[in-house]
Image 1 (cartoon, rainbow, N blue to C red):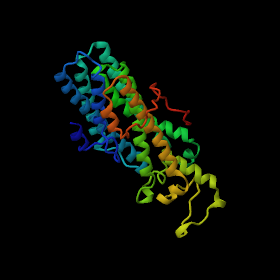
Image 2: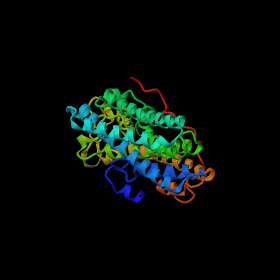
Image 3: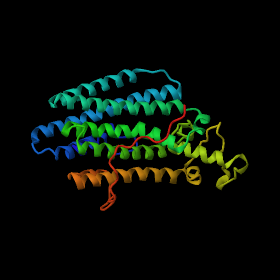
Image 4: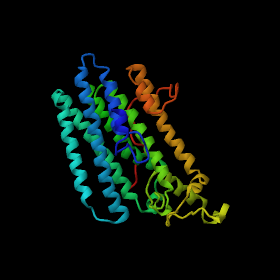
Length: 324
């Protein structure tokens, strides 16, 4: 099933092969392995439900995200995708309620509440991102920590959602395995988002890049900060006669060379790898404490022995206050 999911239409992100349903299924397997009286046949069916529900939530998120991007960035009107995204979201909610119906009432309420909180946190991150989009002056007031906090809210919360659905249906959202997996997926999906943001920072054509559109992503904020600090008097020519644009008011249209020369590529790669290493460290802790996480480590792309310095499993909070 995991291989089949990876071939379908909605990956975890547009530039990633990993699927949210894959992560949810892996979370279910780990959490279910801690339940001694689990019925294998019932677990198999519920595992598929967990993956399918997570996929639907992601599909709804993509549809609604595209609507908001078009409205804010391109100035278009909200069209049929709004209705479609809402319908998919309602279907996902209905399926989650049905899948959780076998849980005790308290656990069922905890599961649905946790899932909805994670979804709302992601929506909040998306709205904060859109509130800065298109305003270079507003982005110039942001710190890197602010941009990272937006990324964690927008993407990391969706990682939590995948863990909540998978582990929550298997063993409850308050189980030790679920707590660890929520932190693990929070960091891993933040990593995926950072990689995606770096790809979008120098899109082709350049006018469609996140930097040209003035989106408050980590590479975009870093690039704005770096080029602003260079100052108008230090804009030197480089190979081919091109210049690094150092204006806060007129968004730059950088290419890959610009990103490398300003350190944007290296900085974002290091920030992304830090998130991935945290995820792998937590996955190793899960393997040591609960077992059953070898498949997850393989999914995360961990090399043998990588991340053997386990990270704390407490749920991280987005850092820094975001200016309004």
